[in-house]
Length: 328
Image (cartoon, rainbow, N blue to C red; front, side, top):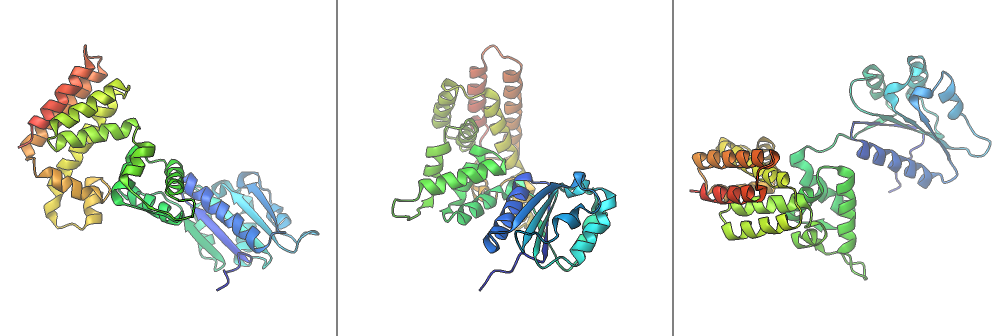
């Protein structure tokens, strides 16, 4: 079935997630070029627009029957130009494709509400995912790139790269390319591939060490800790990973018997859904008193390494030993 024409339409892109908003705008511009390669596309910043300018740039050209316009930072459009834009949105020219990008927030809310009421306006909201939704977002990015990824691998990638969507999207593309054979076949992305490309990140090492200690794997946790120390991983990243892991475990313990679904439970715990199974397995070795003692030990270690303890490496080793010892 032929795709719907972008001409005679207004695309309203709203939301404060810059990467997603820019991608939506670029996709719209690509759509204009795909449907009318000869179309001129003008890009303007709303704050610089004067009355009559929109009419001028959407008027027929001597060189092309079709045209496009992208208005960025719509929230800063001068009030004197509001009526002109609304008149255009109410009855856009069938030969013009218009993209309006609003940076989010309540600025110019009245203008947005009036635009949303126009039949020719389609809104795309680009709010970013919540922290516990990031693994699902990564999985969707991988699928869009033509691959697939396990939940565990997606979670590990988030731990390695962080919450920056642009960086996560680039990492997903890199991994899909790495898993694609010369014949074009794409394998499923697993945690080993993620470790191969991103396993050296300091943040990942910190969480790995914390998981090992929480699970009572004393020798393995100490081995990984010594590797991290030898390779210059900052002490605060290790204590931060321990604090995060133990707090998630405590929240999971408090919330798991409330009959919540996985999505609500993940939101309550502040962890991605795939972590719930890991937390459930880990919690079997803990009670409330042990968790409280372990969290206290991590807080003391964090204070020691931040305060310039005489031997921060020793403080970290003692933290690992204490956490393992707090298990039931």
